Length: 283
Image (cartoon, rainbow, N blue to C red; front, side, top):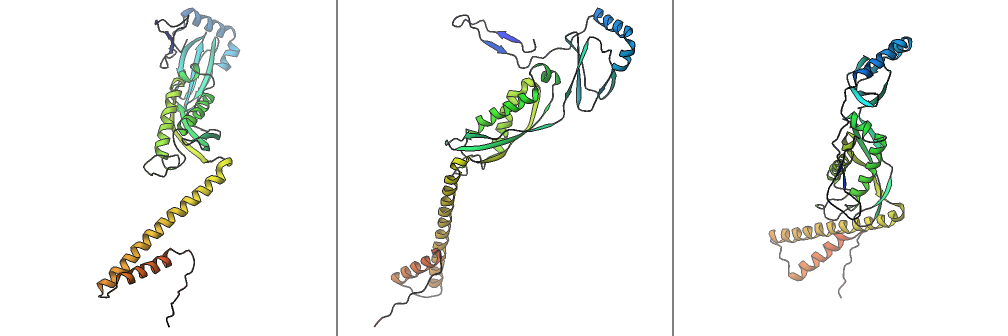
């Protein structure tokens, strides 16, 4: 078996044993016995008209041809070109090592704060070990896709959708950090399949429809508050500069007059609409 199972001798409850799968184990290329080769050649001679048309195997660039002879891995051919192999007793399996991009299905995941968000991702990968890809897993591309969805859910649930503190990572502002973590977690899972992940990035990210309207209102309210803080801070700086400018030019202003000037300027600068001057009339 390719996945070598090592049984730990430590006693456990009942008849159970701990089974450890060696992910680095590979199916070795084995020598086919001489009498098997003789049988292949004998069949090739008897069925020569068929053999002459079926013995040519073409390997394209970025492909690997696995030759299994009588149930044993005999050859792995990754050199592009035409190769002559007597086909009797052999099965041939072509594994592509080209880069492949898959798009994970959009799924609803709860972020760190429990808010449901809809997330989708793209994964770029390629097969670096055709032997592992063929023998270790069934349908290697489906294996990568399923594990990508699992990793996506696990990583997204560790972060909030957005954070008030810019230094705290979130799904919206920590794309590089999350991208690296997604790729690293997926590499650990698909290493057994001889796959190397080059990119795992979020392609879709937004609140689920059931809370989208409420979150939009909250975002608008937060944006209004932030804008007000900015306006007030700027108005205070303007008022302070105005009073300092009057003092620098020798204009004496009493404390009550300074307070009135500051109040009027703040009212004008912080107002949403057009302001009107009101002049008091004294008898």
